[in-house]
Amino acid sequence: MIAIGCDHGGYELKQKILAHLAQRGLEYRDFGCDSTASVDYPVYGKAVAHAVADGSCDKGIVICSTGIGISIAANKVPGIRCALCGDCFSAKATRLHNNANVLALGALVTGPGLALDIVDLFLDTPFSGEERHARRVAQLEEA
Image (cartoon, rainbow, N blue to C red; front, side, top):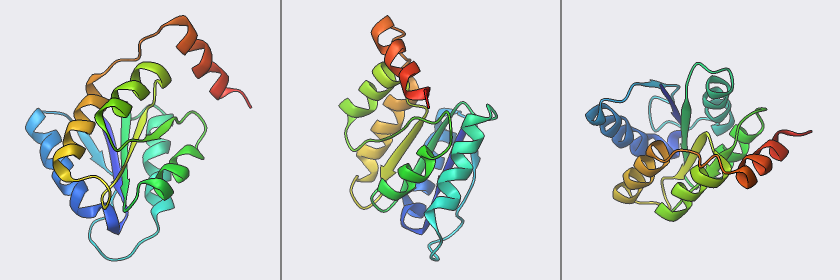
């Protein structure tokens, strides 16, 4: 199950991603927002992050205009490793090396075609599990 949420700046890209996930046959839970009316991104970033952190969703996707604010909000939740990705290499590397569990996208920065490629790489790339990467990810969880 994939948790997904956005603010008003990410609403249109979220709609494209939802259609793409449905086309792939992937289950998702939409945490809002539900229109382009102005809302506060921390509400939606944290909602997605909590769903991933508590295990009710496997991975998350958060979207705002730049991806910056909503990624900061998601990363406030313990156990979340949210990565803002604007290219395919970063999306793949953050899964392989950081075991990122939430993807952040900037709707005004990344076009929809590239965003869908990034989503696919993020969702389809497993964590490498290599000792050096596992060690580093464990260090991220330390207080």
